[in-house]
Image (cartoon, rainbow, N blue to C red; front, top):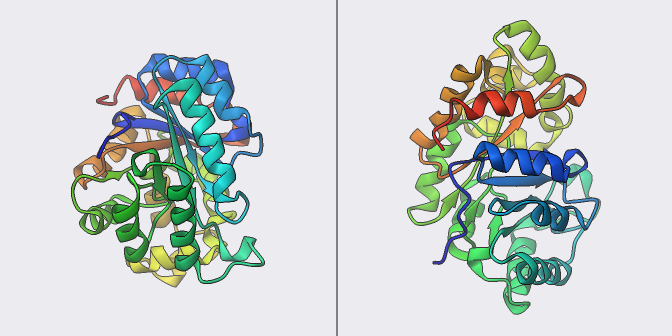
Length: 278
């Protein structure tokens, strides 16, 4: 299968926090991809980021299958490919039961959506699937370039690689806090992990599969869980935590730098870039 090159590390950030200026600096630092979080509320954000850069891939993380019809996603894919070549990666996913009134039979909906992307001319190598559990991970291996798991640990990455097998992209998202003070780092991470993720059943079920207990997930998350889902430390320590995903079988890690009050992530990304093996 043809592959789009996204390098070993990228960044993940909500679409509203992405600007052409940030994209250019992230590219200059050596990151290989920008994952646009939140099923882009601005349909032109991906085009602006691609137009502002020269080599970096821009990926959606993710387009929600309920919110965006497959034919609409395919039309955007073709337009971006025509304008920028193979620098756009279409990430799609089913979303959350709690957020979608019509949410039903998710596996069948995913299969139907991928069928419609096929019919609309989106190649397997141009798309990835948000996947946590074994069944959807296997579907990602069968029907897409690979999987983009969110809110996971290196242990999940190890299990996901076994389900995907070789030859398919495994690109987990990893939250981090570049701060060596544990209490301050957890104060930044906990509210951004808890709300909404520790109240969404697909994520809590996945954590339970990984061996986390109900008491770890309750009441904002135990310190151990928060530290696992958003590792903290100086840049070298955080880089080591990110490298653990590669050791477990990841091809690429989408780094989400958490900051207090959603402050500029670039200082943390700069510090990490000096430590990461791109």
